[in-house]
Every structure is written in C-alpha cells, then in structure tokens.
Length: 496
Image (tube, rainbow, N blue to C red):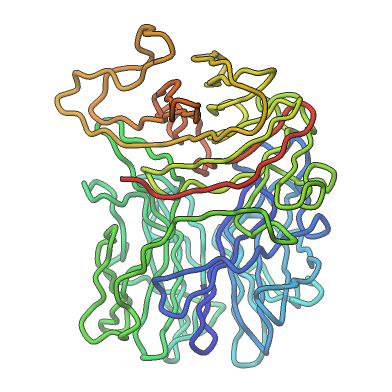
C-alpha cells in the first residue's frame, strides 16, 4: 500500500489470473473500490498456457516517488521481476522494465540521495536504476529474520532517521509471522527488535490465521497502520479455508522506536483518537453487471489469458458473449470470465442463453478442483471434478432459451460431528461427503417454471486450499466449452 495526500492505493497478488495485480483505492483505509488492474494487457503480463495454478504474479509492492506511481512484482512463470510506472494509478501503466535477479517479493525504496533500493526475499538488497533495470550495487545481505523458514516480503522504510526492515518468516501458512529490524543505513547492519516477532497468530485460536506479508502506511493524522495477509479458516481439525489469503488492516503503535501491533481481528475497532474517517465500513460485496458498458469491469478475471476472440460485449449488445477456446474446464485453455469469491456465504446468479453451445457457471480453484452448473442440449447438470475424479451429480431437462442459474455457498457449524454435510439431491441418492464438525455447502439451483429448484448440494471443502494446495481461493464465474453462449447479467451478493 501507499498513500498520496488523502488517497490510499493497494495492490494484491494475482497469480495465474489475467488481468494481473488488482489496484484498489480508498480515502479511509476501510472502504475500498477496485479502480483497475496494473497489468492489463498481454505486453505487460505473459502467462504461458501451461502456467500451473498459483504460479504467475507474486507479491507486488506499490510506491509513489517523484510524481510517479511504481509497482514492482515477480512473474515467477518467467523467473523475472518487473517494474511498471504510471502518472495515474487507474492507468495506463507502462510496459515492464525487467530485472533478471533471483528470489521473489520485490519492494522499492528511495534514500535521501535519490538512490533506488530493490529488496527481495532472501533477504538481499540491490541499488538499481528503476528506469532501465540496471543493477548498480549488490546483492547486499541485510537480515534474515529470527530463524524462521522463508524470510520474505521485505520492505524498507525511512522513519525518524532510521531504516526499518519489515519482513515475514515462518512460511505463509499457520507459522507465518512479521518481524522487524533497523539500521542507520539501507546497507545495514540491521539490529532486530527486542520483541520479535511483532505479529504472529501461530499456536492461537484466533479467527484470522497465517498473518504476514505486511506493509506499513502513515495516515494524514500521523497514525500508523499495517496491511497484511491472513486466512479465515473454519472447521475443526484440520481447519480449511476457501477464500484464499485476504487483506487485513490493523493499527500500529510506536514504543521505544519500534512498531507494536495487536492481534488481528476479523473486524478491528479504530483506536481512540484515530481519524474520524475510520468508522464502520459501508456494507460491501454485492455486485451486479448487466454488461451494458463498453469494456469489462476490472474485477473480472480469466485463467492465464483472455483472448479478444473469446469474448464480446458488442456481438449481442447488453449481453456478454463467450466463445469456446477449450473443450473442458479440466484442462487449461477454456473460456472463463469469473470474479473472486469474497464471502463464506454468498449467492452468484446469471441469466444464460446457451444457444447451441455448452456453457454455465463454475466455482473453481483450478482445473482439478471445480464444481460446474452446466447447460447443454436441453439439459442442465451438476458436474464435480476433484483430483482425478469427475462425476455428474444431478441432471434436469430444461426448455430452450434463456434461464437463470445460481451457485450458492453457506456454512454449517455442526457439533457434534454427526451430520453428513453434502448430498446429491437429484433423486434421493445416497449422501456424498463425509461427517465433519463444520461444513461448507455449495448448492446448485436453476430457475424453472415452478420456481427455483436446487439440483444438488456438494461439500465445499473439496474446493479448499488444503485439498487443492496453492495460494489462491475460489473464483465463481461464467464459462463456455462448446460453441458460443451469451450472458444477460451476473449478480453476486453476500448471503446470510
């Protein structure tokens, strides 16, 4: 994150999805709106067709210096860091300047002499020319944390005559932690804080876990804040998470020259005396797209690429037309336009005219972990793919023409663990799933002449990071695997 005047700008990892590096804007640190994507054209973001899930673009950093916004990140699929710049954070952003240096998680900082410092996991620093990517000095070893695995996500800050080095260690799951050291010079040596790690939730039962990959920002009133990633796991042992790593905000106090951070809550109360703007957030999350605009909204993503021939907003005005580029969602290359699932309990609906094609709604983590509500040849079916297994769980004949499809997720908290938490409801079939203390149910619904009909409910834990592996959560969206199909609207909203 960075602040310019009263405006805050935040960027996040996008991994294998195109466009890359979503950019969000806020005036109060609480209410955020996506205003664009930093890497929004193929000349900036090259993701090979065989890019695995959770590869691609890692850990961007945004800074503002000398009248320009700077974003640095790593395309791990190419093995290269890249820097892009813009006068306006909403874009356009420049084509990349590449740096062929090892490691990931790059960050930029400028010293009083105008030198630009690039830090990476490891933790090492380089003095560079950011306009050309030329390395002028380094690598310079800085500080590798307190001994935890994977010292990474380093950021340098010039504060009150000190250079502070903030980094994460302990891995990006439940061992994650944030530590800090300081020096009088960006070259070091760096002395660690006496209370490291300054933030970790490992070994706790707090609702937010895996806290790390942090960044600091100062508000206009002088207060300091930290943004960081974390996960909201649910269920008993082992817990699981389905939304990926989310961004959290926590206030920072300075004590004896060191940052002090309290545990991260799902909803953090603003500290006494903080800016009046840090009030309760407006209810957010509901989203509807009627596809009346000339371009797709910035929140829509597609795995690896979105060829111009795969979609159109003009072929049928007021509709999003998708054209098949792959015959199955089980392999890379299919046409998918999706949005990130942002709530544990939500409903996503779309009005689909399948024409003579095969199309529908999918909720997915990757090609081997997805559930689909698919329409083809006058039938709608629920299809599940988990690892090497693929199964049709329900089918229903439907009339030709447009119809409304819905995928809904909801959380069951069942104690003691004596209830089966997923079943094929198409014809009273035997339950599908396992007994557990908390269940994430995914329901598949079609609107019929007699009203909405739920075809099946499946256990959502098979679409969790703990099953699929990787760094990302789910997306929900529209797809076509044969011919062409058109979508009149898409509606996403939190439920419960």
